[in-house]
Length: 164
Image 1: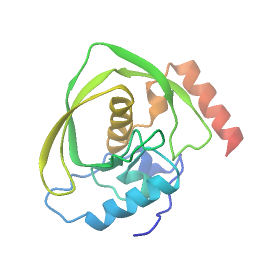
Image 2: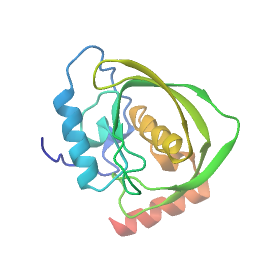
Image 3: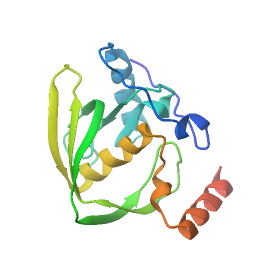
Image 4: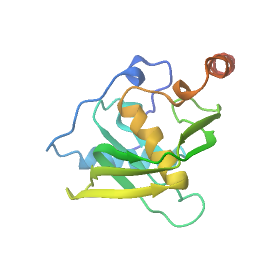
């Protein structure tokens, strides 16, 4: 396993929709992504953030607050979103030092293949739902700030420009 370099916005790969993994073996990539995420230290990391243009992300929404509960999601799909919305701070390893207040569905159902090859569908709530949606967005070439009103997005991008 090794820590991979994390792409920084505005790298164009972060604005690119990823290809399905399908039946390929990406176990080494997943192991490297977990090592990279924990070392960063982050709670989620998507394939395009490390230059792997595949529909895969890893996350561990609660490891900073307690036990590790790693989750690898291959070819994920959000099959349901709640009408209830939640707004909270989101950071991104590809845009360090910048937090945005993003509104997203408070609950989702996420269908995916796990790292053992098993098909799963999980009902996610709270920060797990937010984290999964953030990482899922990366697979579609969408950064978290795309969900902000234009004036907030412009301010965040200006602040980031000053930081980078």
